[in-house]
Length: 249
Length: 281
Image (tube, rainbow over the protein chains, first blue to last red):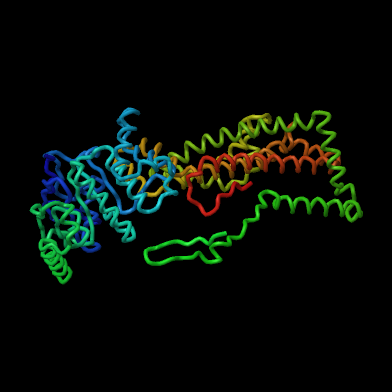
């Protein structure tokens, strides 16, 4: 069991303007927790605070009772952010400096297998489609085997067909990979299809206004294919209501 | 030939004529770049043959060619070219090295940029010939002062390109490095320097171009050999053919070294996703 990722009284302000918090959240589950909210609600800021890219103005982020260390975190950004001068394998190896060559090659192979890109290892980023590039970014985040995997709207720039395929890859990762995964999205269906827990964020400053635990679903795969499932429909309605109320506020 | 048909679910798509008939690209390559020089030589020959300009002022291309041949045969062309190339090589090396250090420092550190850059920008505005008297006083009339002058010329394009290249590296790529626990040195080595390599190589090309200009200035200010000396010597003894021959050698050498650097830059930055990759050659 992964230790808990705890967000305690987190506040983030830019130039004395609060954009997030105070916010407390404990993420104990393995599998995906989706944070859903409108643009500007502080979703990405929350994720950047969890990753260490931003320092909280107040409060703490702890993993297993200690501050989060960089090697514990994998991050998939909204855009692939691949190093254009590195091949696919070179990009996946980007976070594997600490491994010797043999272990590094094995980790690259495993990560590329997980996203179905083993054969594209020698390609340069300019030769990849948007979906492939984002899968490489996912492989790069997974390769160091992080305990926390943060996904910042990784599907938002993809077309609907590619997005569905990418959702399959993320679901595959969630089912086969033991990490605390946090998915930021503004797409309710995406959140409900992929996540085992959904939290709605209202802001600025971003605060949690709803939290649904979907652990009782039969399984991620079955649930995701049955959008007429009563739990899906009721949770979606509650989520829409929470976000609509947030917007009205 | 069977027509190509693509099945997309219930639809069948036949590629249109515009897709089927892609116009063949006419591959001129470097050939088109030779047209203007050839035209200029022909015009020059015409002017010389018709006597529109006094031969004492503008000798024809045949006479200049003969002068070049004579210089090559008596070994003076090789010796002068070698002396110039040696000065340029040292000047380029020192200038590029200093620019690389300073460009990296000021590009990576805003504090260093605020500290060094205003002075360097002011020095950049100083005309090259203004350095000559000072360098002669400080370092004498021999090669040291010439090499330093060339290094000054090479320094600024390399410095400016590298500094702005490093400072302008996409923040998003740097964040990827930070997420993976990269420190400042690792970020510089693994992210910033590779990302700015196209700008750096452009700076090196610009620096080399200025290096050729500065080596001419340096040798014209007082040398006993080198292509710049051939220029001033030609002026003093009234040999415009010698002057034009030296100018042509400068032009040819500048073009060749730029072409080599452009090819190198092209090979090193083949990862760039640009519309069309030109070697500038």
